[in-house]
Image (cartoon, one colour):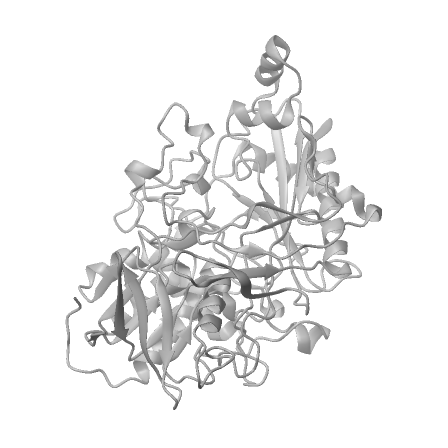
Length: 564
């Protein structure tokens, strides 16, 4: 097989980490090949928010845009925790089995140019500084080998490139510069939560959002359609395709290949990653990898490493510690929704536009270690049109149902919460021993277990959400769902943990493999902890750009070469 030698670096995966790394390497003068397993989305074709039947369509799933996974049997549900069971007013109990069930695919991601940033709401959060020191300060989990101060300049750089809109202050998350754009105005449901929170001692503020509050860098301001997670057709949401990838392509040094899944990564006996094989059309191609940046996500990155085993690396690449696939952390989430008489237009405005950080620090929840955040989630969970009310909130048939929807539409108020997930030995990613994809590669098999700490955090989130809705004037709850009985992970972390100790981690503080000097990993798999509810995209960007700077500063650049 012929080997292509035309690039200075190869990046696998074009989501938050791969796109940011590719852009920065191009900016530093390297010629980069960016391989993406999924397709390139066309916003005007794929995002149908302008169509009359928009509410019937969630985020599109064109061929090749979903990587297959398998999920091992999940926890048995303890009836003593039944107050955490998912339900709504129309369907009733959503999980009737005695074990936890996967909601939809279980792992919600996008395989495509831009990765899951195409589907994300656009929350743009810095990690709480104390959440990076769980082991040393609280005796649980794992410390990051870097501090908040190491990431702060990269946070600022990425916020300016993406165009993040946010408030003047976010408490412990100190800043060297202000957000590039002012915070978005609060929607009607967010305003109601802010008011309801005051008597409870909750402090709400505008959320920091990768959505433009004013025209910026050639992109238009947000039109407040309230459907960011169905795909943004106008380009104001700061997904990786319209930010890092656009700028990388503009440099002339980035070659992007969508629909090109990597089949295998190859290393020499000395430890150097020398080539990888990827599929282009129906042809397997081999490319030389002077530098390899792996950013396929916390599920697919360990899968590729584990599958690339060989005579010299029988446990897979970068896995001398046995930590590849371990320390998997999923999304610990909760949502409660009530109907509030007198509340109008709750379907209007930006998704997740208000947030409460009061319980985000690792010791902020009484009696527990590991924090959480609360946010306005009415639009995020889909109460943006009448169909959602009819299917989830208003019971009855015929005229009774129609009258109920007309009377209640715009009065739904939802509170969302996401919390810390502490690593445990029963939650990990491995290769499925039986199931394979069309290329014959074993599927990643996800194992998940909720410890008592996670369940107690969920109980706190549910209790606080219900208190808040009652204070807001909700006369009845119409829907609740959460991670206790639903495995439904969007933010996943930890399967290639970062650390100083090569026996207990996969990559070093600059995201470089302990075993392979030219292999870097720049996705959420390197997170030693999940944080207390922070959305990870901004931290992934910052880590990836920091890693790219380390690559560029330590690399003697070869003569300029153009990509294929």
